Length: 326
Ligand SMILES: C[S@@+](CC[C@H](N)C(=O)[O-])C[C@H]1O[C@@H](n2cnc3c(N)ncnc32)[C@H](O)[C@@H]1O
Image (cartoon, rainbow, N blue to C red; front, side, top):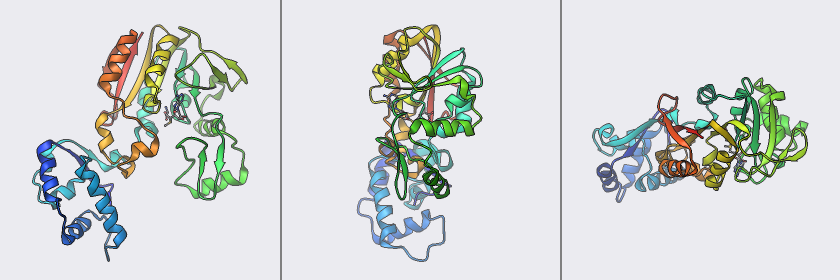
């Protein structure tokens, strides 16, 4: 019911008022017309499930989440383009920005330094891309969490991370082979398939808010990241996944050499109101916390960073890119 070839509009207050008035007591025929207008497939019958899904979406629109522009037009709200603060296309919000290869490449192209710490790496693009130009410390809290094999899904214990949710054949393969024991194994599988220079990546299991206590999984020993010991830090949406982001940011400051940069991306706050991956509750589903840019900047400056927002990056409508100089 949320078509990909659509535009979604974050409404200004007046337009939201119009929308709420139009949907105050929705009639049956109004719901059916809305359904037909939004459907991007031939509709033979509108089932009770279809109605429920649409009513569920409407309940989000009434709370200020972004409706499809087609729905606004169908409800008689003229020129929605002029009444919106921001409009994003469905294809732009079809996936999270952190899995977008072009965004990751653009990000990595800016990073300088011979030894880079990547915070909350997961199995993301940053370590393999960075390994082409630097030595990488890839840190994640969950690297030793088990891979759990279930009938219809494979996931990392105690996380929201699912392996190949859209590919039953890849899941069958993993289930048969059972070679992946933990999250680290999955990250290595992914990075190897992406031609990473694996020898230049050191996997660290540890909490970003206490980098003195990590486990070096490459050498299989305890380790501590010392003060001023890395040339650069990368945080590709990491702070959106770390509830204790303030403590983690202070650790980034501690371990960075003087003159070094931390490169940070943060989801735009308004993205919370868009149906990323076509779900309005995507932040809950993916364990994402929206961090206010103002709070983040204040905290970084308090620690002693010089903060420069970057303007010419890809994906500007979806996230912010900041350079933090120590
Ligand atoms: C979406 S994932 C990967 C984000 C990654 N930077 C990328 O480029 O895709 C977020 C990761 O944050 C990790 N994480 C969450 N809290 C953490 C913490 N306190 N310390 C280290 N890693 C953490 C999770 O285990 C998960 O792998």
